[in-house]
Image (cartoon, rainbow, N blue to C red; front, top):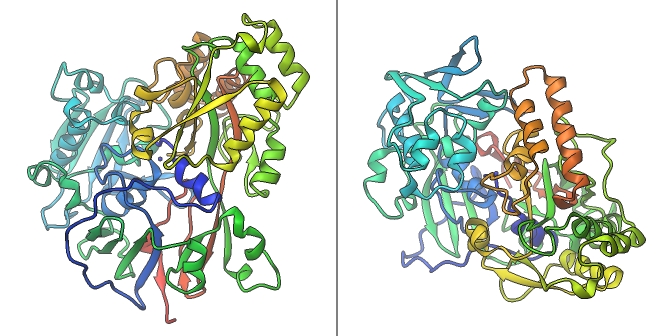
Length: 532
């Protein structure tokens, strides 16, 4: 989404459980909840934040994408198109964008959005006091951002307000993915007057998106209402009601308490039964996502490439996908998911091979598993529950290598936003594309020193390939360079790729227009709810 993924909700959804950050209940009295036609009811969990500059995971983005907006959005084909920007020019050297804002775009309180509001929003996102862990990854191509992030400047030198409706943005090199990056929440516009309320201002956000926050009772529900001042395609829904922690999703769907529900592995046989009532409601949406175990290459034993490769060869991913996930995911040999430009069907992965795994440990600097230091995997969770997929992987390492791996769980919010402070020898995570470009996976996750490269992997050859690929204007040549970089990452076991995801949803027949794009997000202003 950083779109750090959000492995937590997806994993627990597949295993039939619920994830989320347990927050203190709001003291506000219950309000009446809209019902009937024009109201979409969904299952949900509390967002960690509604601040676009800070959010770095899919759960919060689900709400932020409805409440806020930016210069650019991705269309149904995931191509960058104008949003608040009605158009733009690009200089011949590919480094200066001139964005032309729509006139009459308003915040939800009626104040018009101006170019200065974007300058303020981006400089706020980069201000160290904001605490954004996404600003460098998504705004860092703009000249002057690094100085603001470092506290050496308060203004981004690569931003220039030409007039109320014209914003000039200069980046450090021609990069084909820059416009797509502008669709990420870090670049969304926020209201400086809203910020003046201080503290958790985002509990009463003044956004520009198709919906506005009407109610948020923690652990109970969140209600979005149609923004009547929205400049784009006006939502036909009057409201969207998210029911929090209301029970088992499948039960809620069956009893009509929600209109759309995710399908867990425990119910996949039931919903695919041709004689049952649910098959006609089932939709499967491909997702540009990648789930993996990442090694901390800065600590023993995974500072040794042979040990990393051994742990990769000791996991049977085909068996994991078929038995644990009931075929609901696709085993991953590499990092780039199917459907992503640059996906390499011929990539040579580290396939299941127990004997080779043992030989690699013998040829490592440790020589034998008895010489390995204690190994712990950092995971997200609460209450000591270990997901069935992680249990299966730990079992294979125990049986195939004779290695015991411990699990240390972090509260979901701490895992998502403070993993760098908590990392053990490896961690369990994943990534959903923010935009359909290999840079969003390979560069953001594995470049030396990258903000999201928690495992500390570093290879100058990979960095050089990524540098060339990022600025190569010939698309085929650029993708070939990314594929070379991916092959090195896989061969050196920078991580253990596990599976590529997809979304299984049940959607009531009276709901039209509800679809998930390959980023896992719906456009709720396209949804209608009929008589039922």
